[in-house]
Image (cartoon, rainbow, N blue to C red; front, side, top):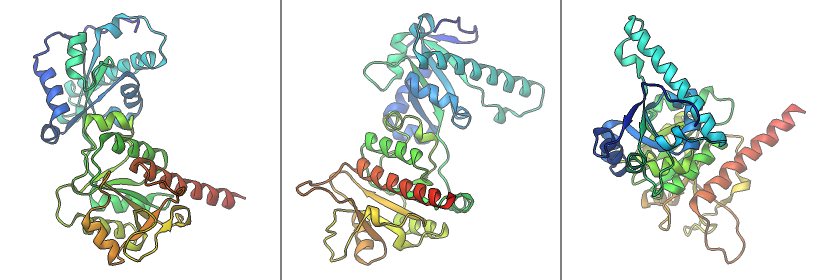
Length: 334
């Protein structure tokens, strides 16, 4: 980054400072993330993508950038873009502070962003990776959607609503990959059932590459009767329970036939439930399948193939839906 940083960018050299301790605690502790309502994004490309989107940029509260990036010369496209967006953030924060000073806005409306320069050891301490990627951002966690908002959003969309439900997925990498596919295939929202991974875990955010802030999240973690609550919410969006598909192997084990993913009619609202890595769907979901309350779907595979990675499975279904809607749109246009 070739330009000289603004004088307002205070330098952080102390690895034991309050700011560094906050970053470290948010990386390690879900309860701290819940308490503070904050999470962390890191890496030049990810932070650049977040800052370039107006909606996610408004969630940024603090950025620490390595002095080695500030002082260095780089032809890297993302580092050059990062420089531009840091200057945009700085100017927007300056304008909000001026509006507060002139009485146009209240203190709780301005949310200025603090930008700091950090030594490489400071960036390492604030990072969740072995090798620091040069920039970290402290971000406000978007609020979980409520049933009323979910229903309103579904009714306003031009596409049939489609929801991805995570039933106890634990791996942040899988959750991040699913979020990326959700963002790329116009999924209405991601619903979290109990024991699911914290989508605001910085590891999941890194894997999602910015999709975490573009896909609405409905968090039902820790709630009794979460599946029933989710089904009721979906019904309010026009999705009846038989249009909720639990992803299984083709043999469900309960005498019911499972539908191949390409035979599901995605021209109507629907949802898919993805089970926990290794263990599959929880008993609550299996009971709903057994009672015929929800349907089942599978992806046909070559003989001898045991299973697919859950993120791969979910992505295949999401993009089959997108393919069907694209075909329908093309036929309608002609």
